[in-house]
Length: 126
Image (tube, rainbow, N blue to C red; front, top):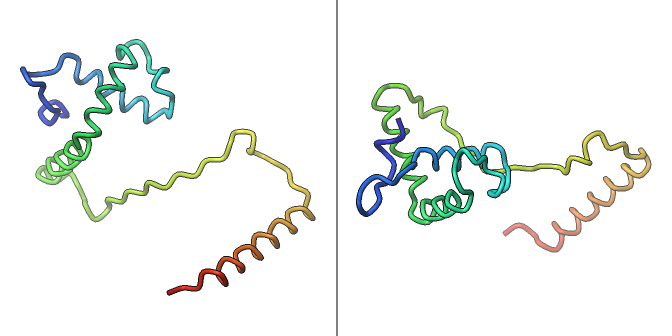
């Protein structure tokens, strides 16, 4: 389904283009460093280089637009439900299950509220 929408090289199809796209998707799905891309996808530096070229050229945006248009043409997309949120908040894995003394927690909450009040006073809404 992706192949018709992937970019062509100067002299035609780029070898292993689908494999490189899968490698990029694997990297972002797992959140792993580029160097940890499995060998089955080829050299990590080649995959990273291809990603950089595609990102700068707007290939991913074009691919997404074409895929949504194709799904809409087939009646397989309900665009009323499309929502993208790029906000991600992650805690360090050592933060999981952290126990905080109730008195300390109360002091931290008070300090945060005071700081918030100071910021609002110093930066009034316009």
